[in-house]
Amino acid sequence: MVLEIFQAINSFHLYT
Image (cartoon, rainbow, N blue to C red; front, side, top):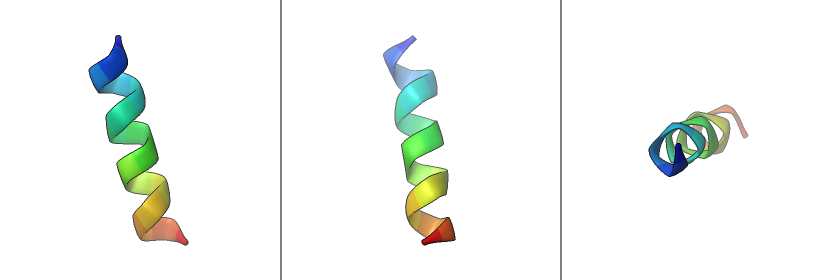
């Protein structure tokens, strides 16, 4: 799902 990927990217942004 696109939402699943979007959430993953959101988490990555916080990790950076």
